[in-house]
Image (cartoon, rainbow, N blue to C red; front, side):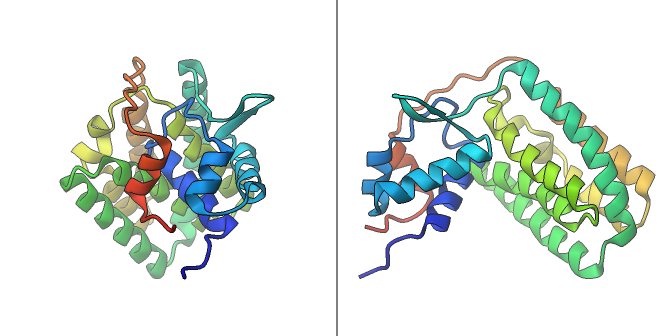
Amino acid sequence: MKPKPTEDFIYTELYNAILERRLPPETKLGENLLAEHYGVSRTIIRQVLMRLSHDRLIKLEPNRGAFVASLSLAEAKQIYEAWRLTEAAIVRDVTKTITKKQISALRTLVAEERVACEQQDLPRLTRLSAQFHIQLADFCTNKYLGRFLKELVPLTSLAFFYEVRNMPICTKDEHSEILDDIASRDADAAVAAAMRHLDGIEAGLNARAALNQTASLVDILKSRTPSLS
């Protein structure tokens, strides 16, 4: 008999499902449904939902339950404005301190992005693209800047305003350009490349994309990880 999944495992699965934009805004995350799917108690599910609420990825509504959060266009633009300011400082910090091992780790991540792009694996591409910036934040010596960006980036997955296949990362290898400039210790060029990258993504925030969720919550979760029942 397989062991029951832990709270951390369930949290990570739901977190990644939101990051991959598999679970659109306003998707209901029913406690009973999730408890049955994972074979755990509602108490564990409740703890997971509380953690996701703390991350601001879901909202808990009295007498209604938990739902994936959503962003207005104005909120999304504010997030990108904050992202630019924070990322510029992080890129300058990382350019001074990055190690060969850290550069290698980022190059591996970028290579995985290109594979996802070629395979048109849009959910995985979305998650890996976000993880590139989160990894940069991890490498920042100013942990307050790093922590802020790591909280900020996942929220962009709640902005369903653009088509993922039209993201700049899938049409041009912009992360490699940023990384090459960082590896060359050229902070000005790295910041400029990062700002062009974020400008390109934000330029797609024009109109809300149609959300055609035909699969059930459980079917969506099963599609990204094997059933543990």
